[in-house]
Length: 385
Image 1 (cartoon, helix red, strand yellow):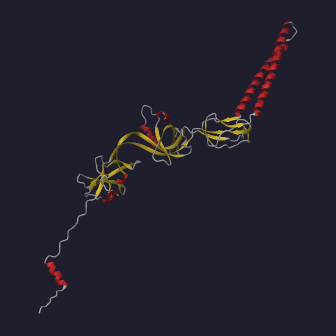
Image 2: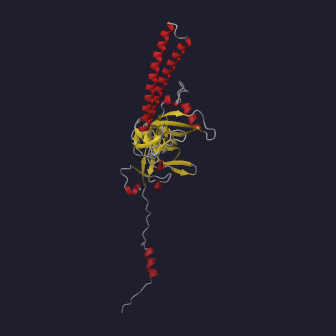
């Protein structure tokens, strides 16, 4: 008879431990993180100051009539670009022509009387030879002839004035530019004088001007940059360039030249008004528009740049992560400058062009720990993100 022997599970486990059934657990090391590294860029950068300004027209004219009359024609469309001397309004010319005809006839009358006075003066001179005319009569005839001669000339001047009024009945553009809407239309009476109404307004649009306020500190800094040979030269003589952009534009795509600065600093604001002139042949710059102005300062100088996204903050300090020749992460405290339009930040101290800066994968890098540096072209998209 065979007997079946059963052992508890605890006994079996104990036997396995004694016999070395358990395998020693192995520790898995995490992979070295991959990061993108790049050398700081080195460029020739020109320092500049940015200001807020506005566009203004160098000339704005209120068009008014010089004579009284009824408007018979409006020769433009509201908002047109007009040329200097172009017809804008025409008043009824008939009253002016009638005045010219009347004044011309009056010249003929005075001239006929003058001719008769000359004949009378000669007759008196002949009578004087025969002692038939007194000296008083001779003087009176000569004075009458001179008076009529003066009246003839005065009436001729009156004819010219009447012709000028006829010319003024055609209201023309005194300057070239963009005209606003017609304030009076055909059939309206125009009074010339103290109550003469506004007919239209013309704004010069080529060239136009840009005004902005320059703070006193910037003014003093610019004065130090001026050449010592002619420190008192006007801004127009220096032909100092500037760049500007409309509020909706990126960068500063347009250029101009500074040509005027005010003669004193405003004590209440500490600023001085500066003006620049810009060409505007297409009329795209509208007077009154706001603009961004950038004034370059001197010549370019070699500057170290790093991506702004690679700069980290530690309270009031700024730093970047760099790797040494053993690919170990090191902290480099820097002094950042201004941010450029392409996302690069000027660094005035803390890094050199030959340093290797971590630009992507910063979150995976730890100071004093190694990393695997890769270039942006070999780093997978998922890892870069």
